[in-house]
Amino acid sequence: MTKKILLLAIAVLVSASTVAARPRLIVQIVVGSMRGEDLDRYAANFRDDGFQRLTRGGTVYTDCRYDFQQTTTPVTLATLASGAMPSTHGVIGPQWVDYTSNEIIDLTDGRLGPGAYHLIAPTLSETLRQYAPGSQTVTIAMEPTSAVELAGRGGDAFWLDSEWCNWTTSPYYASDVPEWIAASNRQKYNLSYISDEWRILLERNRYINSRQFDITLFELSPKERKERKSHIQYANDYERLLYTPAGNTALLGLAKQVIAQYRLGSDETPDLLNICLDTPRRISEAYGPESLEVEDMYYRLDRDLADFLTFLFASVKEQDVMVVLTSDHGTSSSYDIGELPAERFNARQFEVIVNGFLNVRYGVGNWVVAYNDLCLWLNHNLIYERGLNLAEVQNEVAIFAMQFEGVSHALAATAMRTSYFGSGYARRMQNSFYPRRSGDVILNLMPGWIEEADRCRSASGSMYGYDTEVPLVFYGKEAGAIRINRRVDMTAVAPTLARLAGICEPAASEGSPLEEIVDL
Image 1 (spheres, rainbow, N blue to C red):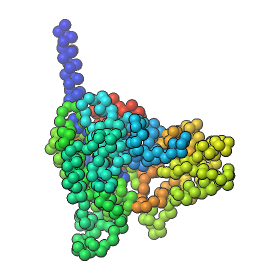
Image 2: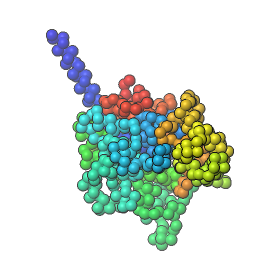
Image 3: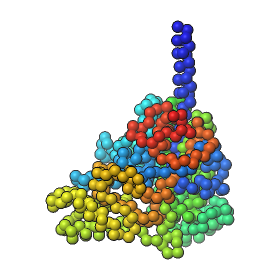
Image 4: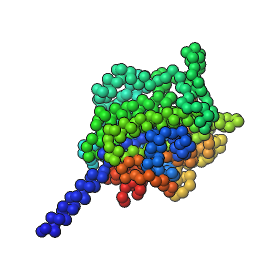
């Protein structure tokens, strides 16, 4: 009897120590369009208490990839949140076509009721709230798509209203924002972050990049500021935040308020805070990764991050926190970085020419319903009305698409559904394919090619290393100061954090937890 009591006491102690080992707060920080190399590239000018605090004191994975083609923000954030490939979580882009009605469906359209937001796979946020009652999960971002994809259907989510520059949410999450956010909105606090000019932070000779567009190397006079025309013409204050480092400052400022107001990490039940910094992605797109604007943004973000980490560890004991730093994707080189601008893929022209090809082949009609993010949707209703074979039409369009300059590969949806591609480009394209939503024909552009778009000097959305490789750093509880050089799939992040929080992995998770962070 005494032996049984002793064993029971040991079991209770082991159980208690296991619960105590969980972090009280997990903070996941996603830096938009940060390449895998950027933390090392700009390290010399980072301060000790910002990025360097995480990389020197945490577990740094040096070879992390998204193993699919469609490396755009909605898709990759859904993978980060669920631990699943796009072929499982169902997010293939910001829009797709309903094949029965030919209606274009928006990913974040919350008017559709109980399946709104269309993320099929459960997120870490949802799973944490389900299996750890009392957990609080909050997701913040500048843009609604980013907030929605990281949060899924779990917890609170806030983003910036594009008209009034206020923090807002959706009835899908809450009827209104909390009063402390409403008070900040009434005071127009976000506008206080906006500057009249974007001036260089450090001495010019400390910078690596050389291209310069809107950033100034010296202080302008009031007259010079008034007369100067920016490379980017801002439509409103929202864009002044989104396309300047002020956006990072505003978002991390909100993050500090969230920690304080929600009292995150105040008890032993683990909480989760997701922070998606969209501003770096917008600045990279507009100015290119080779620009002074991108480099200066990182140095300013480094200081904002240092301020945030100081606040975080003053609010919650450092040994009770796990900080994860990563990115949604990398980005291409600027299309105009060479002596002559490189050609870009004209999506609208492609759409019109393909419809013209089908007019000649099968008769006049609206054959093409939509094109978006390298996916082309055909009019199934018209194809069936004409008595045509859908697979044959898809294959003909795929073959025709290969004639366009800049197209490296084109696969028909039928081939994706009926074949298994175990390696190479086709495997990565298949990993991005979700049958109910993906287009009839999916393209892959040649290395370095991007689609032509406004304010788009650089872009993501390919299977190449500059888009798929991202940084990944774990700092805090259970993360030692080491560098890991093996290849890591980004589907590993969500199951690792779930295991760390002491809960089961998100239901559709396909990745394996990282052994350096959790005991397997």
